[in-house]
Amino acid sequence: MALENLKQIHVAMLEACLGMNSAMAGMASAMEIAEVPSGTYEREQSKSTSHLLNFLALYSLYVDICRRIKSEAGIPKTSAPYHRAIRRITKSNWGKHSVTGDLRNYVLHYLLENPRTVIHINETRTVNLVMDANALLYSGFDWKSDAKSFLQTSPDLDVIEVTRAVAKDVARLIKFHENLVESRLSHQKIAYDTYIHERARFKHLQKSAVDMGRVIKRPTSMLSRLIDKTVIEGTINSALSDEDVRTVLCTLANKYDNLSADAMRNLTSEVNLLLRQRRRFPSAGAYLQGRHFPPPLR
Image (cartoon, rainbow, N blue to C red; front, top):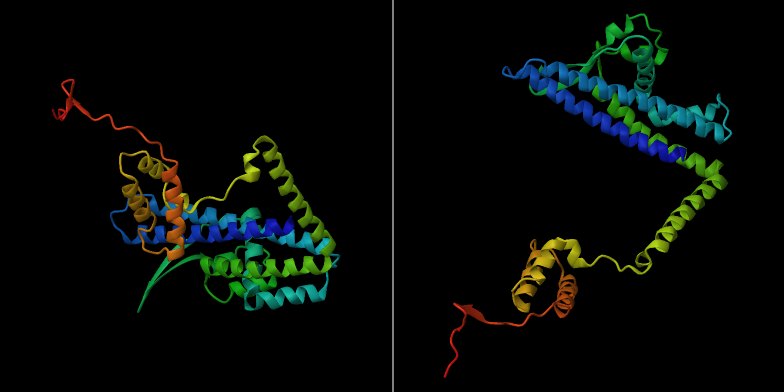
C-alpha cells in the first residue's frame, strides 16, 4: 500500500508543477499587459504559493513513506549502501532535494514567502518563477549544508527548475523502492497482491449475485464504441430504409476512413444484426381530408 501511495504522491507532485507553471504564466501576463485588472498579479502569485506549498507537503510525505518502507525492509537508519544508492540516483540534483526538504520546514515554522516572476528579454524571452536566495540565506534559518551550498550558487532560487528536477528524480526513486520491496519483502508483496486480487474477485461476485447479467455480459460492440447510443437508436427507429440505415451507420463509424477491411466487415455484420431485430411498421398510406390519397384506380 505504501508503494501505491508513493505513485499517487508523484502524480500529485506533477499536478502541483503544472499549477506553478500556469500561475507563472498568469503573473507574467499581468506584468506585461497594461490593461489587466488590478490585483491580477497578486491573485496568480497566491496560486503559485499554494501549489508550491502542496508540492513541499507532498515531498515531505514522500520522505516519510520511504522511511517506512526502509524500516519494514529491515534496513538500518544509518545504512551506507542505501544512502549511496539514493545519492547515485539523484546525482547532481541532491542540492535541490535538500533545499526542497528544508524549504518545507522554512515555510512551515519560520516564514511564508511568495514566489515572484522574473522576465528576461535578451535574444529570447524567458520567464522564471523565483524566490530570493539571499533573503533565504540571511533569514536566520538553519539550512542544512547541502541546501546552503545550493542556495549560494545563484541570487535567485528557480522554483520551477527545482520542483521539476525533484519530481523527475522521485519517479526513479519510487522504482528503486519497488525493487527494494520485491527483493527484501517478496513474501509480503505476494500476500498483498493476492489480497488485492481476491478483493476484486469478491466485489465482482458480490455484484454478480445482484445482477447475473454481469457474469455473462458480452463485450461492448464495435458500433457502440464508435457511435453514440442515442444516434444508433434514432437511426434504427427512423423511417429510412434498411439500406439507408446501413449506409448512415457505416459512414458515421468510419468518418475518419481509419477502419480496416476486417473492421468494416465486423461493423457491417453488427449493423445487419440490428436491422434483423428492427421493428417493422405497416404502411397505412396517406390521407387527405378523410380520403385515401391518391384515390384508388377504378
